[in-house]
Length: 408
Image 1 (cartoon, rainbow, N blue to C red):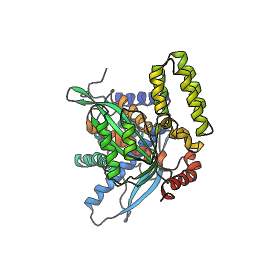
Image 2 (spheres, rainbow, N blue to C red):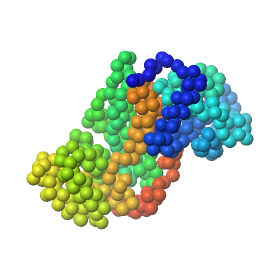
Image 3 (spheres, rainbow, N blue to C red):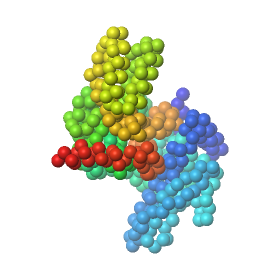
Image 4 (tube, rainbow, N blue to C red):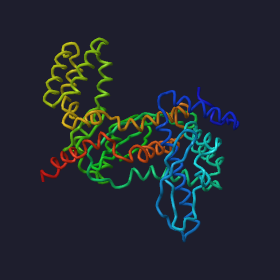
């Protein structure tokens, strides 16, 4: 049962609820990684918003970049980016006192409550107010607005024309609209640049179910913002999306997500046949070459064609799109065979959805938390090149150059 959004908790019960929520997150196998990154992002983003306010009030001041600092929240180590000014007289209030490495118990509870239990932006602003991070309602509004503004900018900034890979996927969520819950779809596009770093290319939430017209709008926007050359395009098999992707990026390999295909196998095949299908598919994924993979794929189709003719016929028709990942370096085959790069964001949104009572309390709240999830990745694990990508990066760039530049 969803909690009444109008009810409030006493400070003692609030702290208890936060601790229970946090313990549940840890027991769910999430460890402290994503939460740690979200906490670090919140502190960094709040500090930047505070500096913006400071600069507005002091026109003679100028920004002077950032420096990295480690702080401790209980047993959780946080990495934050601290904004500076040229005079050195500005210091974000969201940091612990000078020469103090960690936060007080009250601040820890409020930060954890903000990220794991807030139902809306107003609830988050209320937590910020209790922490004393801002001195007026106007400042609190600007802190929240800066996060929403950053999300909007992500969907309009010019893009690098070249991407080694692009991952696309949609996620269904529910939004509260007055006294009703309405479905919405988040359209997410993640790019892998030639520098080996992942970045969000587009993230838009639209009311209603996932549909082809919305995907057409998202892909057209990528082109209009400058994206031109993509080596491999990874997506699920949403009806009509395959020819659409091929039309927008005709020189890209299009890979259909193999995890989605394996889930579909469980629906179409009997339990015993599915066990055999999954074993054969695992052998295909570990094939040494595209040729061997194609042979094994044909053998798999022959094995089940008689019992499941329609589904196997669909698999055969899309064989090259299920096996495109085999063209790439071994280190990258697992990453290029699924849309898991997008699932990293969806997973964080799922945690936030559950902690909000099973749905998002407004479109603004959804955008606010989507921005948190995205920024936590880009300012966290995506800030550096993953080891698997680093091992294959020179080979991937050589393949890119061979396909797009040597052919000129």
